[in-house]
Length: 589
Figure 1: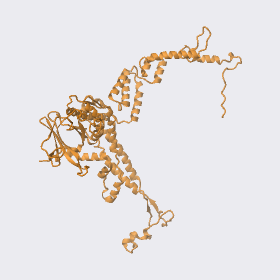
Figure 2 (figure 1 turned 90 degrees about the horizontal axis):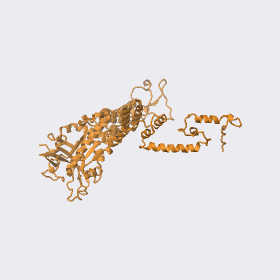
Figure 3 (figure 1 turned 45 degrees about the vertical axis):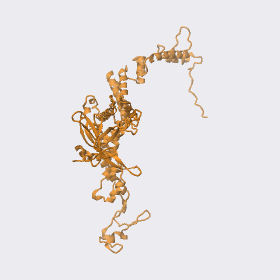
Figure 4 (figure 1 turned 135 degrees about the vertical axis):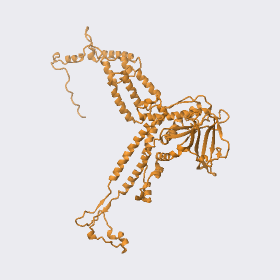
């Protein structure tokens, strides 16, 4: 009979090799170097390999590329809405009363740091929803006691079976591996980890729970032998699996391994090639081809004979035979290293391309729904949205199990943002400038408003909540026009193409502001007229247009005509033009 400690799902052994590689690649550091740095077979002895390994660095470009995807999702976690549920659930999601993991974590922090990163690199991660057994007898004792979460990585989800009769999204049974501390008997410090197995299964409509040690013996939480499993008053197994269609490390982990070995070879090549060596042509007819005895008179010592030693330096000369090239210092060619560096740059670029393709190719059963097909135009954003929907689906299951523990009839509703992007701020600004140029090209209000919505989505969609974007879209639909450029609106008013009221609304001012502005404008014109218009003789209308009031008077050339009359020399006593001459320069002090 098999022991529970040896049981694994058929897919477990099949994927274990990949899991090891993906985890080492993402964790990087010394462990990654020790695991995947390769020796140059016969060209490199163990001592040289050890020296090269000590000076090798980790080119963690696959990790950096995956972190960009993780951060693009995590930065939108602030826009996740969680409505309903119990007060304890809402408090824990905010990080109060110990948080969702009894370590002070809010739900956003827990999902972003414990679930999202693990799911992206390993394809899946499990979350177990537990409940303290000692919740107390009084309401005061149980006020801060609530369900809590802890994470199981892919390697610790040993075996599982889905419910094939009622709900295929729920588990019929699952076997998990725990790593618990072994404590020192004298001082109480943890000194080691001991493996323990947690089995949860549903039998005859009842959910049962039991611990097992390495030997397969059922034990209690104190590792004491027992024969009775614990009955959980739940209708479902309290385990939630967050899983995407494929790991984002699948195609790029080998690239980082190749980069590691190329960078290591370049490093040792650069260090050793940094020392030039001396060469000198020799005419074997004059030197002879026989073995010269060494210093001890034997042939074995010929290699150390003083006649082969050459003393060189800036204050020393060297005699060489006629017709031969002068002795010189040379160094190895840099072309192999240059080719290697170019290859590394190519690999770095391909890592980002492959990761983008991996994100774009993510798909699941929910992506086939009608509401998600609208996102197929931008496959990369669709892949990011799929990741967000996977998190949303898993968190909704957590909220459901949470409500079962607390006996709540209402389950919290969880909604994640619908749009995500990997584009930089500069990319979004460039695209928005191009969209802005398209607005006036077609005289269609519907077209212009559609482009305007796309422009708003490009600039703000990745950083604004769904409610904010819907409000912006509504304001665009209600707008009486679409151009809000001050210069264009001022030109339209001047040429009589738009009313003051409509122009005020296009500029974003509240209703009724145009009427107030007209009254203020009228008062301003009156002040200008009183200050600048001279007292004309009775019967003559003041030329207000020539006095700075552009809105008064019908002659557009009134100001120029008045200046011309004033400059007429025939109207003066001296016969000269009544204007001041060129100003004199101010003397330097």
